[in-house]
Image (cartoon, rainbow, N blue to C red):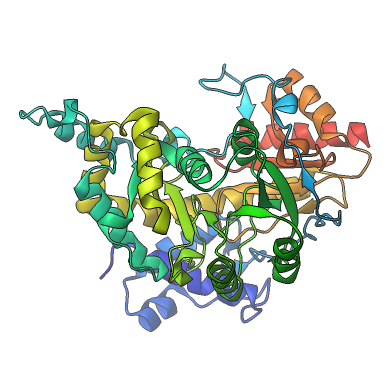
Length: 474
């Protein structure tokens, strides 16, 4: 019996609640019935129901058993997509960021930050990481104190290549280069295929770290509106490629930061084919791909890349620990150029961290950790959503991501997100205002909320206070 079979059972029941097989308020099968159906112990069935209770989806009622309270999807309308006509624009997001306080921990007692989308301490496999670091540093040959190869530790690259099995890929160790986090992977990829002044197509809204990277490289952007349910319009993308001189495209195909959109397999395949037909480099950021809430890991654009025009970038910052700063890229036909840029930028990524991560992967610890982490993140996303619905004004629109750890919230039009952040900071709360996620400073009445908090009364009160501040600006 699998250690995490209860998660599979919980996912099945959650799906049946969402599709109305088990209507809200009506009794669910008993623990014994679940045990007999799935051929598991009553204790495993209880863990499955307890997980759904933690997510706020079920309640246990005396003499009535377990009943569904709410679905995990479809409670509020999703934020509206932009309708601005695509055009080549300069990027100037640093102007907005320079006026904000630096949000770096540790925070003072009582300070609640919803700004950074990173794992907090309770989400990190702390003991496993500690043991792997100790093991790596005990190597008497001193390998961990020497430069690693520019491409990265071979054992680690072999393990990363094996992960491609889960998204229907077929990478080998020779396809992969280890980097200092995803942002370096993205930067190296951009530098390999663009020159200052070139135009790059991105989704809108777009993660501000990507916009900062583009700005520093003196690149221009065309922002492609991203529908909250369907993602980018591939016909509009084709029209842009036909109309403008485009050097590259850069997309987060799985759980876009900030709006959580996932591209369909059909769109991913279409983009990969477009890249080949037009010989257009497509840089894919899949940093959240492992944090899916459903039963199956989503594919990538790279899955459908047969000719090496897709440059896949990812990291372990969102799944192991942000402080590891271990990322990687599979840049296809551009791997030699990316390796040259890596060598002249910082030679290689830290050896001891690569050895430690390789141990986590080869021992199976990483996969076991993910099976615990995914439902934990999903629980935090659902709880945050529930309390935003409860404490924010009516009419607020909230994204409904199927993975990742952030929520994109559209506030009433009269609310200025930058003013809201300033007020929130006065109450020891921080948020990511919407203008950060656009090259033009758009999304003035949007905010991003990170769902990485260990839920307690203090966090709930912070959401409540934030809702009151929103009301004060309406």
